[in-house]
Image (cartoon, rainbow, N blue to C red; front, side, top):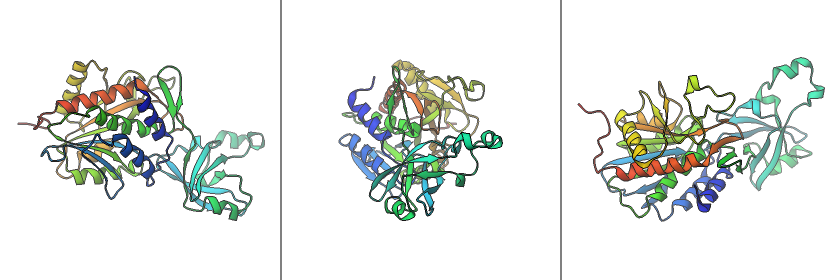
Length: 356
């Protein structure tokens, strides 16, 4: 089970606003968490955080998770002080009416709510239609004029849902943007678990930016690192809730352990390494067939430069891209331990990739 220091970091990471393109406060948290456990810590030009262990080794492994989250961007303020906005990343607009939000104003955080016409005043067709275009929604921060709103949240202000980390029953927890705070936690906690060891390969632990805008940070980071082997850590769909779809996704349960992606985009020798290590370590492992490249950083890592063999390790997640994403903390613990066990077992020249 995660200890108090691990939970404190996870909570702080979840409650720090990091919409795509504005991830720096989250990266500072990550850097502090791994301080003393890496030989090098630095940011690249895309804001990706690199924590490197044994940087001089000729064989390079990139271990990646993205730190950004979906968000909002103020686009227009009317004369009464209501804020209209556009979306940053894959926001589910059906969930926005009635949402609490936090805007990242120049003077600090500004709380607000996304309003909508009361159901009593809707015509029958309006009730059935659901949410219309995004410009039909607005943020109410309580301002009484355009000038009052502009003073604290001018056009161009970023924002996110206001949904903090919350413990549920047992080992379950809920928060906005566990996608992919879970992955960042697993990647960086695996680094901490390797403290005091000396790997035989160079390990590049990356907290990547702007994944939600098209895998942009990881693409830049992978090009710069030029890895021989890549590991992407993200979330995937749990299918154990009442609307789960195991026939199209696979049987994936919260608390069932990390999920290994299997398919044409993932190197079979590397996947077998994860299977063997999980069995040896007594860590439960779930399997998710993926029939093509998908929307995780593993896809761009696979296609960087002359190509990189990759593995996709995922954490089961319910209610993806909502403000109530739900996980099992045991899955984080098991995923970080599996990752650490795999990395510590790598020889100086791992037999990963296609061989004749």
